[in-house]
Length: 159
Image (cartoon, rainbow, N blue to C red):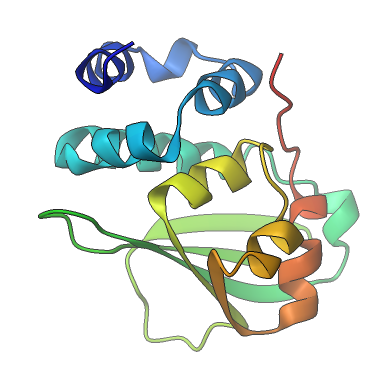
């Protein structure tokens, strides 16, 4: 399938009707080059990131987080004409709130990664330790929190 076809296919999705497992399967089928091409469409990138971060609160596992208090900043590096996208996840004693943009608060952890690596991480197609070992993610702050971050969320598995 041509890259333009992948962009059209993803652009035509009703993200609200796509399950996390289906999304994981879509990401698994795409190469880094294809994901980068999709991310170059600024409006589509915004839709995808908004959906991923919008689901984060629903996929949060308060039982696993316990009394954890942490502000996690996600910086997804832009490509082409796109700027970096920044979101923050605040975990506070069993609750999780996500907001777009950079606050003035100091994060306990900042993760900096490209669109393909971010989508592979949040879709369960690659683990945080592997990304770190391959130098695909820059971790600033609490490395132990970064290594165990996926246990605080129900990460989908591709069918």
